[in-house]
Amino acid sequence: MSRVTSIPVPALQSVVLELTPPNLVRLSGTITSKEPDPELTAFLRALQRAVLEDAVSELRVDVSGLTFVNSAAIRVFVDMATWVQREARSAYKLRFLTNRRVTWQKTSFMALSSLARGVVVVDHVE
Amino acid sequence: MQRKDSAEFTLPDRSQPSSGHFRRGPAGPSTERQGGGGRVLLSINCAAGSDMLETTHAFLSSYLNNRFRPQIAQRLSLAVYELFANGLNYGSVTSDVMLELMQSSSLISVRVENDTIPARVQMLAEHLQRIRDNAEATFLEEMRRSVSGGAPRAMLGLVRVAFEAGLPLELTVNGRRVSVSACCRD
Amino acid sequence: MHGRSAVSQSALAALPRKQSVTTLASALALNSAQPLVFMRFQPAWTYINGVREFVSFFCETTFGRQEVADRAQVIIQETLENAVKYSDTSARSELELEIRAEDGKIEFSVTSLPDPAHVESLKAELTGLNAQEPEQAYMSAFLRASNEPEASARLGLARIRYEGGVELSLQEQAAGRIRLTAIGTL
Image (tube, rainbow over all chains, first blue to last red; front, side, top):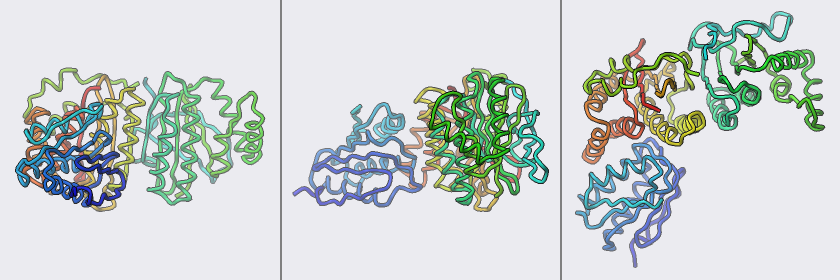
């Protein structure tokens, strides 16, 4: 049985999380909290570990519905990529599904894919 | 567009009998951010006729609720809506509408300034005089007119500020530039 | 509408990359008499979302382009976060936000009263940032964020420059206040 299915999905204030096993998570809304929400980071970390244990080749992260985030939230995605590179030894890819009409998504994920070549892939859904 | 600057912010003198509901004199942006009779807390300049009313009002209401007691915030929120609506609807599209929130030691005021046609200036002056004479009667009359429709259009907004919110209205005219303000004690 | 003489169109490009952040401020500041938006508020995190959303709507309505609104969102969010995080906690520590536009340029500025220890650190961050092209500085900030957990300050400032399409400068004012200014083309 997939480890991903056993991960509880937190109900957060400004961002909605949807998890579709085996390997798709969708974030929509905005993330502008002062520090990265500990529930969000714990959820994403648990998801990343579960994906590793399930030996899935990629984790798809749909951010196309995230209309705005602050730099603290961008750090969350940087940390995801760094974790896959270092802790998971690049065992799987992070495929970010983005909306090219949303400015922060264009610039941030371009930078992230340069930073984490071979781990981060960026697709445009809109 | 060049406007005359008004360096001071004058407030209605309630200790004196009202000698008129409007003054002719310098209207203009309060370019002094602090000093004189008060300081600017917030100002917004936009085009007359623009779609700024609802969003600006929502933001200002939130701002007022965060800054002042509920009784003050609600009254000023109404004044913001009606004065700003007036300026956006009747302001000349060739110049800005300015919305300003100011605070002195004991008074908080909302002011909207815009260019308009001479006929409108006269209509505004007469309307404010009627409000000053008897706000309740003017309110009831405008309510009746708004229900029955027809011309001239009912002018319920400004009388709501005076009657519902209990804020005295002041009109200042400088040529085609009018400034309508409402204030209350903190 | 906003009528004083313009900063030269080539001013931004002509300035040497390693210019100090304070002389950059003097060279680039817009001089329009009246800001489009001015507001004062306490340095509280709870204000930031509302101000950002209002400014985004204001820019979209005023300039008629979503791209300006998107840039404004990033600039406002990150400059206000920076100001709120490092503000003095005393009663006199109010933030002031101004938005000006003149002759094809737009300027956002946030004035605050920071913890004195932060000012030198901020000046150093800006000098380092301005020593690189915006995209290069942005990539460097990402790399640093990956290697250093506390690097979010520079990521925020780098975002303002790159996503916001503006140049940043800092002016020190009286009584320990600082003004962080972001200027870009419309």
